[in-house]
Length: 489
Ligand code: 5AD
Ligand code: SF4
Image (tube, rainbow, N blue to C red):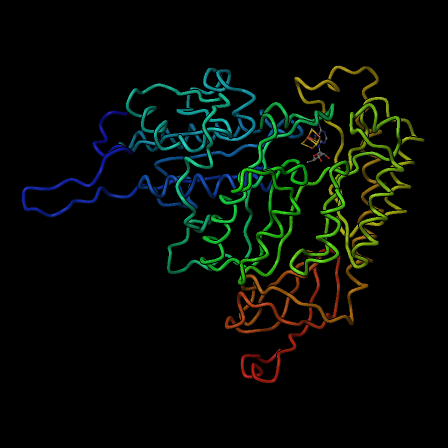
Protein backbone atom coordinates (compact mmCIF):
# COMPACT_ATOMS: atom_id res chain seq x y z
CA UNK A 1 0.00 0.00 0.00
CA UNK A 2 2.77 2.37 0.88
CA UNK A 3 4.61 2.48 -2.44
CA UNK A 4 2.29 5.13 -3.90
CA UNK A 5 3.62 8.56 -3.05
CA UNK A 6 0.49 10.55 -3.93
CA UNK A 7 -1.92 10.28 -1.07
CA UNK A 8 -5.44 11.65 -0.88
CA UNK A 9 -4.46 14.44 1.42
CA UNK A 10 -1.51 15.57 -0.64
CA UNK A 11 -1.72 19.13 -1.90
CA UNK A 12 -0.09 20.65 -5.00
CA UNK A 13 3.56 21.26 -4.14
CA UNK A 14 6.08 23.81 -5.33
CA UNK A 15 8.91 22.33 -7.36
CA UNK A 16 12.44 23.72 -7.63
CA UNK A 17 11.47 25.48 -10.88
CA UNK A 18 8.71 27.34 -9.14
CA UNK A 19 5.93 25.54 -11.04
CA UNK A 20 3.01 24.20 -9.14
CA UNK A 21 2.88 20.45 -9.64
CA UNK A 22 -0.61 19.08 -9.47
CA UNK A 23 -0.73 15.43 -8.41
CA UNK A 24 -2.14 13.11 -11.07
CA UNK A 25 -5.84 12.56 -10.69
CA UNK A 26 -7.00 9.10 -9.79
CA UNK A 27 -9.98 7.07 -10.86
CA UNK A 28 -12.96 6.00 -8.82
CA UNK A 29 -15.57 3.40 -9.75
CA UNK A 30 -18.84 3.92 -7.92
CA UNK A 31 -21.74 1.45 -7.93
CA UNK A 32 -25.10 2.36 -6.50
CA UNK A 33 -27.77 -0.08 -5.36
CA UNK A 34 -31.24 0.51 -3.97
CA UNK A 35 -33.22 3.66 -3.43
CA UNK A 36 -33.05 7.21 -4.74
CA UNK A 37 -31.42 8.36 -1.54
CA UNK A 38 -28.48 6.13 -2.38
CA UNK A 39 -28.34 7.79 -5.81
CA UNK A 40 -28.22 11.17 -4.09
CA UNK A 41 -25.61 9.96 -1.58
CA UNK A 42 -23.47 8.60 -4.42
CA UNK A 43 -23.55 12.01 -6.10
CA UNK A 44 -22.40 13.66 -2.89
CA UNK A 45 -19.64 11.08 -2.39
CA UNK A 46 -18.49 11.53 -6.00
CA UNK A 47 -18.35 15.29 -5.47
CA UNK A 48 -16.38 14.89 -2.23
CA UNK A 49 -13.93 12.54 -3.95
CA UNK A 50 -13.69 14.85 -6.96
CA UNK A 51 -12.43 17.53 -4.60
CA UNK A 52 -9.96 14.95 -3.23
CA UNK A 53 -8.56 14.24 -6.71
CA UNK A 54 -10.68 11.39 -8.07
CA UNK A 55 -12.46 11.25 -11.44
CA UNK A 56 -15.23 8.76 -12.06
CA UNK A 57 -14.69 5.77 -14.31
CA UNK A 58 -17.13 3.19 -15.64
CA UNK A 59 -14.38 0.59 -15.80
CA UNK A 60 -13.89 -1.26 -12.54
CA UNK A 61 -10.63 -2.78 -13.86
CA UNK A 62 -9.18 0.68 -14.21
CA UNK A 63 -10.18 2.05 -10.80
CA UNK A 64 -7.83 3.14 -8.02
CA UNK A 65 -10.84 3.24 -5.73
CA UNK A 66 -13.99 1.11 -5.86
CA UNK A 67 -17.02 2.21 -3.82
CA UNK A 68 -20.11 0.04 -3.45
CA UNK A 69 -23.07 2.02 -2.16
CA UNK A 70 -25.27 -0.78 -0.90
CA UNK A 71 -28.91 -1.41 -0.02
CA UNK A 72 -30.24 -3.58 2.78
CA UNK A 73 -33.98 -3.22 2.37
CA UNK A 74 -34.84 -6.69 1.03
CA UNK A 75 -33.54 -10.10 0.02
CA UNK A 76 -30.08 -11.42 0.58
CA UNK A 77 -28.52 -8.02 0.12
CA UNK A 78 -25.50 -8.67 2.29
CA UNK A 79 -24.73 -11.95 0.50
CA UNK A 80 -24.84 -10.18 -2.87
CA UNK A 81 -22.36 -7.59 -1.62
CA UNK A 82 -20.02 -10.35 -0.42
CA UNK A 83 -20.06 -12.09 -3.79
CA UNK A 84 -19.43 -8.75 -5.52
CA UNK A 85 -16.50 -8.24 -3.16
CA UNK A 86 -15.19 -11.66 -4.21
CA UNK A 87 -15.05 -10.44 -7.83
CA UNK A 88 -13.45 -7.17 -6.79
CA UNK A 89 -10.79 -9.06 -4.82
CA UNK A 90 -9.69 -10.78 -8.05
CA UNK A 91 -9.42 -7.41 -9.79
CA UNK A 92 -7.50 -5.97 -6.86
CA UNK A 93 -5.07 -8.92 -6.93
CA UNK A 94 -4.59 -8.64 -10.70
CA UNK A 95 -3.91 -4.92 -10.43
CA UNK A 96 -1.53 -5.48 -7.49
CA UNK A 97 0.47 -7.92 -9.66
CA UNK A 98 1.03 -5.00 -12.02
CA UNK A 99 2.02 -2.70 -9.20
CA UNK A 100 -1.29 -0.78 -9.05
CA UNK A 101 -3.15 -0.19 -5.85
CA UNK A 102 -6.93 -0.55 -5.52
CA UNK A 103 -8.77 0.72 -2.49
CA UNK A 104 -12.20 -0.73 -1.75
CA UNK A 105 -14.93 1.00 0.25
CA UNK A 106 -18.36 -0.32 1.12
CA UNK A 107 -20.93 2.37 1.90
CA UNK A 108 -24.68 2.38 2.43
CA UNK A 109 -27.05 0.36 4.55
CA UNK A 110 -25.28 -3.02 4.27
CA UNK A 111 -22.10 -1.32 5.50
CA UNK A 112 -24.08 0.17 8.39
CA UNK A 113 -25.68 -3.17 9.28
CA UNK A 114 -22.56 -5.34 8.91
CA UNK A 115 -19.85 -3.06 10.34
CA UNK A 116 -16.87 -5.02 11.73
CA UNK A 117 -18.28 -8.26 10.38
CA UNK A 118 -17.72 -7.01 6.84
CA UNK A 119 -14.02 -6.31 7.34
CA UNK A 120 -13.64 -9.72 8.97
CA UNK A 121 -15.42 -11.67 6.23
CA UNK A 122 -14.02 -9.67 3.31
CA UNK A 123 -10.44 -8.59 3.98
CA UNK A 124 -10.42 -6.96 0.52
CA UNK A 125 -12.38 -4.08 2.08
CA UNK A 126 -10.38 -1.05 3.21
CA UNK A 127 -13.27 1.04 4.48
CA UNK A 128 -16.76 0.27 5.78
CA UNK A 129 -18.67 3.53 5.97
CA UNK A 130 -22.27 4.08 7.09
CA UNK A 131 -24.64 6.63 5.50
CA UNK A 132 -24.13 9.24 8.21
CA UNK A 133 -20.38 9.52 7.66
CA UNK A 134 -20.01 10.24 3.94
CA UNK A 135 -18.49 13.64 4.57
CA UNK A 136 -15.52 11.76 6.07
CA UNK A 137 -14.98 9.52 3.03
CA UNK A 138 -11.84 11.30 1.68
CA UNK A 139 -10.24 11.54 5.11
CA UNK A 140 -11.04 7.94 6.06
CA UNK A 141 -9.83 6.60 2.71
CA UNK A 142 -6.53 8.40 3.27
CA UNK A 143 -6.36 6.95 6.77
CA UNK A 144 -7.05 3.39 5.57
CA UNK A 145 -4.33 3.80 2.99
CA UNK A 146 -1.79 5.35 5.31
CA UNK A 147 -2.27 2.86 8.12
CA UNK A 148 -2.77 -0.11 5.80
CA UNK A 149 -5.70 -1.38 7.81
CA UNK A 150 -9.46 -1.55 7.42
CA UNK A 151 -11.39 1.36 8.89
CA UNK A 152 -14.93 0.86 10.17
CA UNK A 153 -17.09 3.98 10.51
CA UNK A 154 -20.68 3.19 11.41
CA UNK A 155 -21.39 5.67 14.18
CA UNK A 156 -24.25 8.13 14.01
CA UNK A 157 -22.09 11.21 14.61
CA UNK A 158 -23.50 14.42 16.05
CA UNK A 159 -22.05 16.63 13.38
CA UNK A 160 -24.23 17.33 10.38
CA UNK A 161 -22.87 15.44 7.39
CA UNK A 162 -24.69 17.76 5.00
CA UNK A 163 -22.95 20.80 6.43
CA UNK A 164 -19.58 19.05 6.28
CA UNK A 165 -19.87 17.84 2.66
CA UNK A 166 -18.49 20.16 -0.02
CA UNK A 167 -21.04 22.43 -1.74
CA UNK A 168 -22.82 20.85 -4.69
CA UNK A 169 -20.87 20.66 -7.91
CA UNK A 170 -22.98 18.32 -10.01
CA UNK A 171 -20.88 15.69 -11.79
CA UNK A 172 -21.81 13.06 -14.26
CA UNK A 173 -22.09 9.81 -12.36
CA UNK A 174 -21.53 7.71 -15.46
CA UNK A 175 -17.91 8.78 -15.58
CA UNK A 176 -17.96 10.60 -18.92
CA UNK A 177 -15.65 13.56 -19.33
CA UNK A 178 -16.98 17.01 -18.63
CA UNK A 179 -17.31 17.89 -22.31
CA UNK A 180 -19.35 14.78 -23.14
CA UNK A 181 -21.56 15.24 -20.18
CA UNK A 182 -25.21 16.05 -20.64
CA UNK A 183 -26.37 18.52 -18.09
CA UNK A 184 -28.79 16.97 -15.64
CA UNK A 185 -32.29 18.48 -15.91
CA UNK A 186 -33.71 16.59 -12.97
CA UNK A 187 -32.09 15.97 -9.61
CA UNK A 188 -32.69 14.44 -6.22
CA UNK A 189 -32.20 16.48 -3.09
CA UNK A 190 -32.27 14.87 0.35
CA UNK A 191 -34.23 17.05 2.77
CA UNK A 192 -34.97 14.53 5.49
CA UNK A 193 -33.27 11.33 6.49
CA UNK A 194 -33.99 8.47 8.84
CA UNK A 195 -37.25 7.24 10.25
CA UNK A 196 -38.97 7.05 13.63
CA UNK A 197 -41.96 5.05 12.45
CA UNK A 198 -40.57 1.54 13.05
CA UNK A 199 -42.75 -0.47 10.71
CA UNK A 200 -42.08 -4.00 11.91
CA UNK A 201 -40.69 -5.25 8.56
CA UNK A 202 -38.29 -2.39 7.89
CA UNK A 203 -34.56 -1.96 8.52
CA UNK A 204 -34.47 1.75 7.73
CA UNK A 205 -34.82 3.04 11.32
CA UNK A 206 -31.75 0.93 12.16
CA UNK A 207 -29.60 1.65 9.10
CA UNK A 208 -30.44 5.31 8.53
CA UNK A 209 -31.09 6.20 12.13
CA UNK A 210 -33.53 8.65 13.71
CA UNK A 211 -35.50 11.19 11.72
CA UNK A 212 -33.54 14.31 10.89
CA UNK A 213 -34.62 17.31 8.78
CA UNK A 214 -32.20 19.71 7.11
CA UNK A 215 -32.71 23.44 7.66
CA UNK A 216 -34.74 25.26 4.99
CA UNK A 217 -31.97 27.72 4.06
CA UNK A 218 -29.47 24.91 3.41
CA UNK A 219 -31.93 23.12 1.15
CA UNK A 220 -32.76 26.31 -0.75
CA UNK A 221 -29.03 27.04 -1.22
CA UNK A 222 -28.42 23.55 -2.57
CA UNK A 223 -31.46 23.79 -4.85
CA UNK A 224 -30.10 27.08 -6.25
CA UNK A 225 -26.74 25.45 -7.05
CA UNK A 226 -28.50 22.59 -8.82
CA UNK A 227 -30.75 24.97 -10.75
CA UNK A 228 -27.72 27.06 -11.76
CA UNK A 229 -26.22 23.83 -13.13
CA UNK A 230 -29.28 23.31 -15.37
CA UNK A 231 -31.73 21.40 -13.18
CA UNK A 232 -35.40 22.23 -13.77
CA UNK A 233 -37.11 19.52 -11.75
CA UNK A 234 -36.25 18.56 -8.19
CA UNK A 235 -37.39 15.51 -6.27
CA UNK A 236 -37.11 16.09 -2.54
CA UNK A 237 -36.05 12.90 -0.79
CA UNK A 238 -36.65 11.51 2.65
CA UNK A 239 -37.51 8.11 4.09
CA UNK A 240 -40.45 9.92 5.60
CA UNK A 241 -40.31 13.09 3.58
CA UNK A 242 -43.71 14.43 4.53
CA UNK A 243 -42.73 14.28 8.20
CA UNK A 244 -40.17 16.97 7.29
CA UNK A 245 -39.82 19.60 10.01
CA UNK A 246 -36.78 21.73 9.26
CA UNK A 247 -35.56 24.85 10.98
CA UNK A 248 -36.39 28.18 9.41
CA UNK A 249 -34.05 31.15 9.50
CA UNK A 250 -36.35 32.83 11.98
CA UNK A 251 -35.87 29.94 14.40
CA UNK A 252 -39.26 28.37 13.68
CA UNK A 253 -40.11 25.03 12.12
CA UNK A 254 -41.12 24.53 8.50
CA UNK A 255 -43.34 21.74 7.24
CA UNK A 256 -42.83 20.09 3.86
CA UNK A 257 -45.55 22.41 2.52
CA UNK A 258 -43.60 25.47 3.67
CA UNK A 259 -40.44 24.06 2.14
CA UNK A 260 -42.20 23.46 -1.20
CA UNK A 261 -43.42 27.04 -1.12
CA UNK A 262 -39.92 28.37 -0.42
CA UNK A 263 -38.40 26.33 -3.26
CA UNK A 264 -41.12 27.45 -5.66
CA UNK A 265 -39.69 30.94 -5.43
CA UNK A 266 -36.64 29.92 -7.45
CA UNK A 267 -37.78 31.16 -10.87
CA UNK A 268 -35.96 28.67 -13.12
CA UNK A 269 -37.03 25.72 -11.01
CA UNK A 270 -40.11 24.52 -12.84
CA UNK A 271 -41.18 21.34 -11.10
CA UNK A 272 -41.18 19.85 -7.63
CA UNK A 273 -41.80 16.32 -6.45
CA UNK A 274 -41.21 14.54 -3.16
CA UNK A 275 -40.85 10.95 -2.02
CA UNK A 276 -41.47 8.81 0.07
CA UNK A 277 -44.54 9.80 2.02
CA UNK A 278 -46.24 8.10 4.92
CA UNK A 279 -50.06 8.23 4.86
CA UNK A 280 -50.14 9.54 8.43
CA UNK A 281 -48.26 12.68 7.48
CA UNK A 282 -50.40 13.82 4.53
CA UNK A 283 -51.35 17.06 6.23
CA UNK A 284 -53.87 19.64 5.02
CA UNK A 285 -51.18 22.20 4.18
CA UNK A 286 -49.50 19.61 1.96
CA UNK A 287 -52.78 18.85 0.21
CA UNK A 288 -53.16 22.61 -0.29
CA UNK A 289 -49.78 22.67 -2.05
CA UNK A 290 -51.07 20.06 -4.49
CA UNK A 291 -54.17 22.19 -5.02
CA UNK A 292 -52.58 25.65 -5.24
CA UNK A 293 -48.94 25.37 -6.24
CA UNK A 294 -48.56 24.75 -9.98
CA UNK A 295 -44.91 23.73 -9.55
CA UNK A 296 -45.91 20.74 -7.40
CA UNK A 297 -46.45 17.88 -9.83
CA UNK A 298 -49.76 15.97 -9.78
CA UNK A 299 -48.12 12.73 -8.71
CA UNK A 300 -47.75 11.14 -5.31
CA UNK A 301 -45.96 8.04 -4.11
CA UNK A 302 -48.01 6.84 -1.15
CA UNK A 303 -47.19 3.33 0.07
CA UNK A 304 -50.00 1.35 1.66
CA UNK A 305 -48.09 -1.95 2.10
CA UNK A 306 -51.18 -4.09 2.82
CA UNK A 307 -54.95 -3.81 2.52
CA UNK A 308 -56.09 -5.72 5.62
CA UNK A 309 -56.33 -3.86 8.93
CA UNK A 310 -54.96 -6.93 10.71
CA UNK A 311 -51.83 -6.79 8.58
CA UNK A 312 -51.50 -3.02 8.87
CA UNK A 313 -51.61 -3.35 12.65
CA UNK A 314 -49.04 -6.16 12.65
CA UNK A 315 -46.85 -3.99 10.43
CA UNK A 316 -47.22 -1.08 12.87
CA UNK A 317 -48.31 1.21 10.05
CA UNK A 318 -50.50 3.20 12.46
CA UNK A 319 -53.38 3.60 10.01
CA UNK A 320 -56.25 1.47 8.73
CA UNK A 321 -57.30 0.68 5.18
CA UNK A 322 -60.26 3.05 5.50
CA UNK A 323 -58.00 5.87 6.66
CA UNK A 324 -55.75 5.36 3.65
CA UNK A 325 -58.74 5.47 1.30
CA UNK A 326 -59.92 8.64 2.98
CA UNK A 327 -56.54 10.33 2.45
CA UNK A 328 -56.58 9.32 -1.21
CA UNK A 329 -60.07 10.76 -1.61
CA UNK A 330 -59.03 14.05 0.00
CA UNK A 331 -55.93 14.44 -2.08
CA UNK A 332 -57.85 13.66 -5.27
CA UNK A 333 -60.36 16.27 -4.28
CA UNK A 334 -57.51 18.77 -3.91
CA UNK A 335 -55.94 17.78 -7.22
CA UNK A 336 -58.33 15.77 -9.42
CA UNK A 337 -55.71 14.83 -12.03
CA UNK A 338 -53.31 13.45 -9.41
CA UNK A 339 -51.83 10.03 -10.20
CA UNK A 340 -50.71 7.70 -7.44
CA UNK A 341 -47.98 5.18 -7.04
CA UNK A 342 -47.42 2.89 -4.09
CA UNK A 343 -45.39 0.16 -2.38
CA UNK A 344 -47.01 -3.13 -1.45
CA UNK A 345 -45.71 -6.14 0.45
CA UNK A 346 -47.23 -9.62 -0.01
CA UNK A 347 -46.73 -12.52 2.35
CA UNK A 348 -46.13 -10.63 5.57
CA UNK A 349 -46.17 -13.19 8.44
CA UNK A 350 -49.71 -14.38 9.10
CA UNK A 351 -51.19 -13.02 5.84
CA UNK A 352 -54.23 -15.15 4.90
CA UNK A 353 -55.87 -15.46 1.49
CA UNK A 354 -58.59 -13.07 2.72
CA UNK A 355 -55.98 -10.55 3.89
CA UNK A 356 -54.32 -10.70 0.48
CA UNK A 357 -57.72 -10.20 -1.15
CA UNK A 358 -57.99 -6.94 0.84
CA UNK A 359 -54.72 -5.82 -0.77
CA UNK A 360 -56.11 -6.63 -4.23
CA UNK A 361 -59.31 -4.75 -3.40
CA UNK A 362 -57.32 -1.69 -2.34
CA UNK A 363 -55.48 -1.69 -5.67
CA UNK A 364 -58.72 -2.15 -7.63
CA UNK A 365 -60.44 0.68 -5.77
CA UNK A 366 -57.64 3.24 -5.63
CA UNK A 367 -56.02 2.48 -9.03
CA UNK A 368 -52.34 3.24 -9.46
CA UNK A 369 -50.34 4.73 -12.29
CA UNK A 370 -47.32 2.83 -11.04
CA UNK A 371 -46.42 0.55 -8.14
CA UNK A 372 -43.59 -1.38 -6.55
CA UNK A 373 -44.54 -4.73 -5.06
CA UNK A 374 -42.41 -7.10 -3.06
CA UNK A 375 -42.47 -10.46 -1.37
CA UNK A 376 -41.95 -9.99 2.33
CA UNK A 377 -38.38 -10.82 3.28
CA UNK A 378 -37.37 -11.17 6.90
CA UNK A 379 -34.75 -8.57 7.78
CA UNK A 380 -32.45 -9.55 10.64
CA UNK A 381 -33.02 -7.37 13.68
CA UNK A 382 -36.55 -6.25 12.76
CA UNK A 383 -39.53 -7.33 14.92
CA UNK A 384 -41.40 -9.12 12.10
CA UNK A 385 -38.42 -11.39 11.42
CA UNK A 386 -39.21 -13.20 14.67
CA UNK A 387 -42.93 -13.62 14.05
CA UNK A 388 -44.30 -17.11 13.72
CA UNK A 389 -46.41 -18.01 10.73
CA UNK A 390 -43.96 -16.94 8.06
CA UNK A 391 -45.58 -17.47 4.66
CA UNK A 392 -44.20 -20.19 2.35
CA UNK A 393 -42.24 -18.96 -0.66
CA UNK A 394 -44.62 -20.47 -3.23
CA UNK A 395 -47.62 -18.72 -1.67
CA UNK A 396 -45.75 -15.41 -1.73
CA UNK A 397 -44.81 -15.96 -5.38
CA UNK A 398 -48.37 -16.74 -6.43
CA UNK A 399 -49.73 -13.66 -4.61
CA UNK A 400 -47.06 -11.43 -6.08
CA UNK A 401 -47.80 -12.67 -9.60
CA UNK A 402 -51.54 -12.01 -9.23
CA UNK A 403 -50.89 -8.57 -7.77
CA UNK A 404 -48.40 -7.62 -10.46
CA UNK A 405 -50.81 -8.68 -13.23
CA UNK A 406 -53.34 -6.26 -11.81
CA UNK A 407 -50.80 -3.46 -11.32
CA UNK A 408 -49.37 -3.89 -14.82
CA UNK A 409 -52.84 -3.70 -16.30
CA UNK A 410 -53.52 -0.50 -14.36
CA UNK A 411 -50.23 1.04 -15.45
CA UNK A 412 -50.90 0.23 -19.11
CA UNK A 413 -54.42 1.56 -18.83
CA UNK A 414 -53.16 4.80 -17.29
CA UNK A 415 -50.62 5.19 -20.09
CA UNK A 416 -53.08 4.49 -22.89
CA UNK A 417 -55.58 6.92 -21.32
CA UNK A 418 -53.03 9.66 -22.10
CA UNK A 419 -53.22 9.09 -25.87
CA UNK A 420 -54.72 12.13 -27.58
CA UNK A 421 -53.91 14.46 -24.68
CA UNK A 422 -51.39 17.28 -24.91
CA UNK A 423 -49.18 17.65 -21.85
CA UNK A 424 -46.10 19.62 -20.79
CA UNK A 425 -43.01 17.42 -21.02
CA UNK A 426 -39.57 18.25 -19.61
CA UNK A 427 -37.11 17.09 -22.27
CA UNK A 428 -34.43 15.46 -20.22
CA UNK A 429 -31.97 13.43 -22.29
CA UNK A 430 -31.20 12.17 -25.79
CA UNK A 431 -33.02 8.99 -26.82
CA UNK A 432 -31.38 5.86 -28.15
CA UNK A 433 -31.50 7.08 -31.74
CA UNK A 434 -30.36 10.33 -33.28
CA UNK A 435 -33.10 12.91 -33.49
CA UNK A 436 -34.92 11.49 -30.47
CA UNK A 437 -35.30 12.99 -27.02
CA UNK A 438 -36.79 11.49 -23.91
CA UNK A 439 -38.73 13.61 -21.45
CA UNK A 440 -40.90 13.33 -18.39
CA UNK A 441 -44.60 13.96 -18.15
CA UNK A 442 -46.08 15.59 -15.04
CA UNK A 443 -47.09 12.03 -14.07
CA UNK A 444 -43.50 10.77 -14.21
CA UNK A 445 -43.96 8.83 -17.44
CA UNK A 446 -41.08 8.69 -19.93
CA UNK A 447 -42.13 10.38 -23.16
CA UNK A 448 -40.27 9.78 -26.44
CA UNK A 449 -40.39 12.51 -29.06
CA UNK A 450 -38.65 13.35 -32.34
CA UNK A 451 -36.62 16.49 -31.77
CA UNK A 452 -33.12 17.79 -32.13
CA UNK A 453 -31.01 18.47 -29.06
CA UNK A 454 -31.80 22.20 -29.06
CA UNK A 455 -34.89 21.53 -26.97
CA UNK A 456 -33.04 19.67 -24.20
CA UNK A 457 -33.91 21.10 -20.82
CA UNK A 458 -37.08 22.77 -22.06
CA UNK A 459 -40.64 22.05 -21.08
CA UNK A 460 -42.68 21.71 -24.26
CA UNK A 461 -46.22 20.70 -25.11
CA UNK A 462 -46.36 17.16 -26.43
CA UNK A 463 -49.39 15.53 -27.99
CA UNK A 464 -49.35 11.90 -26.95
CA UNK A 465 -49.75 9.54 -29.88
CA UNK A 466 -49.14 6.17 -28.23
CA UNK A 467 -48.82 4.62 -24.79
CA UNK A 468 -47.09 1.35 -23.91
CA UNK A 469 -46.56 -0.47 -20.59
CA UNK A 470 -43.58 1.68 -19.59
CA UNK A 471 -43.58 4.84 -21.68
CA UNK A 472 -45.42 7.21 -24.00
CA UNK A 473 -44.56 8.64 -27.41
CA UNK A 474 -45.76 11.90 -28.86
CA UNK A 475 -45.29 14.89 -31.10
CA UNK A 476 -43.82 18.20 -29.94
CA UNK A 477 -46.08 21.22 -30.42
CA UNK A 478 -43.99 24.36 -30.46
CA UNK A 479 -45.20 27.90 -30.36
CA UNK A 480 -44.86 29.44 -33.88
CA UNK A 481 -41.61 31.24 -33.01
CA UNK A 482 -39.86 27.95 -32.26
CA UNK A 483 -41.08 25.91 -35.20
CA UNK A 484 -37.66 26.03 -36.81
CA UNK A 485 -36.25 23.99 -33.90
CA UNK A 486 -38.47 21.05 -34.76
CA UNK A 487 -36.91 18.28 -36.78
CA UNK A 488 -38.66 15.87 -39.11
CA UNK A 489 -40.45 13.11 -37.26
N1 5AD B 1 -39.68 -7.11 2.85
C1 5AD B 1 -40.29 -6.73 1.69
N2 5AD B 1 -40.44 -5.46 1.33
C2 5AD B 1 -39.96 -4.50 2.14
N3 5AD B 1 -39.96 -3.18 2.05
C3 5AD B 1 -39.33 -2.67 3.13
N4 5AD B 1 -38.92 -3.66 3.94
C4 5AD B 1 -39.31 -4.81 3.35
C5 5AD B 1 -39.18 -6.18 3.69
N5 5AD B 1 -38.61 -6.56 4.82
C6 5AD B 1 -40.59 -2.45 0.96
C7 5AD B 1 -41.72 -1.57 1.47
C8 5AD B 1 -41.13 -0.20 1.39
C9 5AD B 1 -40.22 -0.33 0.19
C10 5AD B 1 -39.17 0.71 0.08
O1 5AD B 1 -39.63 -1.59 0.36
O2 5AD B 1 -42.82 -1.71 0.59
O3 5AD B 1 -42.10 0.81 1.21
FE1 SF4 C 1 -39.46 1.81 6.88
FE2 SF4 C 1 -41.94 2.30 7.77
FE3 SF4 C 1 -39.99 4.13 8.12
FE4 SF4 C 1 -40.98 3.66 5.65
S1 SF4 C 1 -42.15 4.49 7.41
S2 SF4 C 1 -38.80 3.84 6.23
S3 SF4 C 1 -41.40 1.47 5.74
S4 SF4 C 1 -40.08 2.10 9.04
